[in-house]
Image (cartoon, rainbow, N blue to C red; front, side):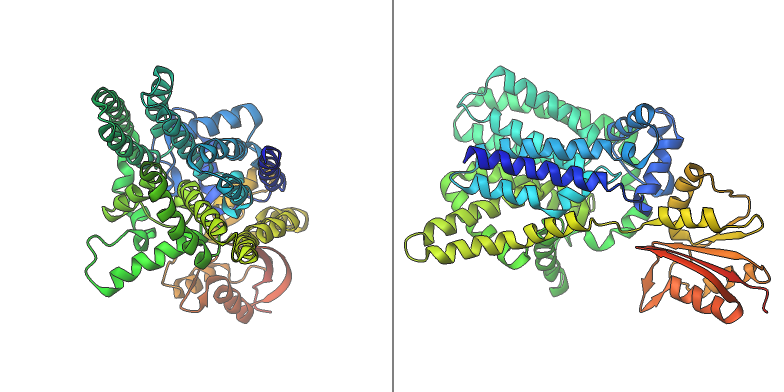
Length: 487
């Protein structure tokens, strides 16, 4: 079994490195953060970031250090997330072997190694992979802290120090610490370990002080950032729920989190999660609380409007989901081993089908959502000296990143407006191109609303007033050359 566990760790690392080595183009969200990282000094990164971006200050320092040492290439910008992704494999194994029993450790590690989103975000220029690694580190240290009846001085010190530092590297680390801290306080109280409660309370005070300093000087603007609040508006838990729609929010988001970022088939995963919850509560309620308390605190923070409960922002709770699902899968296997052994095996196969097929598919054809780099290479080779380039607003951040790297002349570049829901404004904006003999239209990260697509709308209008001369496409990006002289 030990050999299989290390094999799974190796598979997880290989899948993460393979995704990294694809070296796909930066997509819009990555480029927006990357521009701040490469253009600013260490001290300038302490100020609010460009493009309404948000990232933990210590994560930004690491990213800037990687740029200083390795340059501003895509691989350099993704190095910190990759290292966090690789480290997460070892940390997850350490957590699983301490909190699960039987083959549940093997099941959970297999799911984590193959789960799509931890693999993908291990090579993205964002903090989600490091959020995941830090959550696992804190969970591992809390499990080590609580192994003996009286925690050793070493693990107490390590747990305390990690908590003080973690909030500077990860925004959701505060929710993880809150959940773990409350659970461990209850554990001390149950054991009537009053000295332990005092000791842990002292650690909590240090964590709170560190968080308070970080929040006041660096994170406070995020709480009032209307752009971010509006973007994630549907992801805050209705608290308290006041209608059937509000009640439906819980069902929809509970199911959605197993798919993204959990990477599992929601129906079967939820079934195993319920079974695993019951099994873990009966076996060791405090361990179950340790695993799931960060989820509960994050949900509460969402209800208070402090953190969206949705998508990639929840990557750090994936280990908690997988640990409970694995416990449920193992409990189901044990319950069926004498009467319906084949059924138990088939359920396990069904649980792993999605992650295995997803990992294999991604390995064969890695996800590359917005491949703007090859499109810009084409522009570089085909552009004539007097050609004008009109850059769609969704392509602007990536264009800014690659234009300098590729040596693109930006003297005849027009940056398009962001009209949001007023799509007719795009027609007015491209009217300024009327009469130009050669103008390239660069698209990426387009928006669709009520069946209307920005790119389609603009191109249909330009087709009416001009003539297409050339075009080049790649996944998520397009380049079209027009003669708009009206001939």
